[in-house]
Image (cartoon, one colour):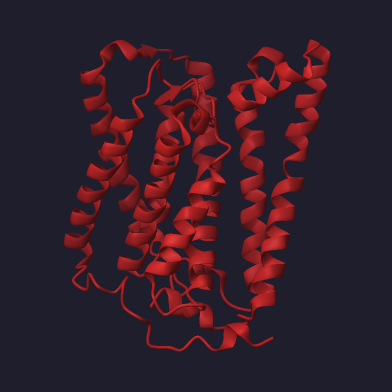
Length: 317
């Protein structure tokens, strides 16, 4: 079972504490380049503290000479560094194969990653067509070949690292670790989904759409990704879905309050968050249905059922 693999290797509480502190420190330090460049550019442009804060909230730095593509690279760098530190911490502190955070067998099924990516990309595009038909006036074409080609390369190289870090940290490392404390898989599922939502609380979308709507969306995404991880007994599908979500948002449709501003093909002047949340639910249902048919998910109670092993080792220092 996916959660039980955390019982192997060094699984005492201090190993989790050290690993999380190292990951947090790495992510914070990797934000220094963006902070230094932003401060230098802001000072050169003569921005006052209020204007600087407003620009940080909007995440659009083009007014001070930082291109959207350069900003994306600097913003995604901490996730790549965090993933690297997490990977080696599990290997050398927890003394287990880091790949077991993705699949208990220690072997990654790349076909599932690509299936999850392709299916979710298709479902997202279908939803976008529906949103366009409901409000065509909100969409405008902003395609620029040069910046878009650079964006395409950045998206394919860096966004999978960002999304993989979030998935492996929350749906892999933390969900497996919390599974040591309880014999009810739905508990780590719920806790990591809430934590995933809270991680996005500072995103500009929260201010734009309100905490209730935005947190419902982010926590809902976490629940969906955690649910398919437990049903499939592996993280591959969730890795594909999350990568498809962020790459699609970067390349095809962006909006003013997006956490990452990109030279995407289209720009939406207005985003209806209630439509987005309804679309997420509909797409998730279709995804689970098709995946269950493809991979033979017959044991629908496994995410509620207690694992067979006892959770003794975690609290033993």
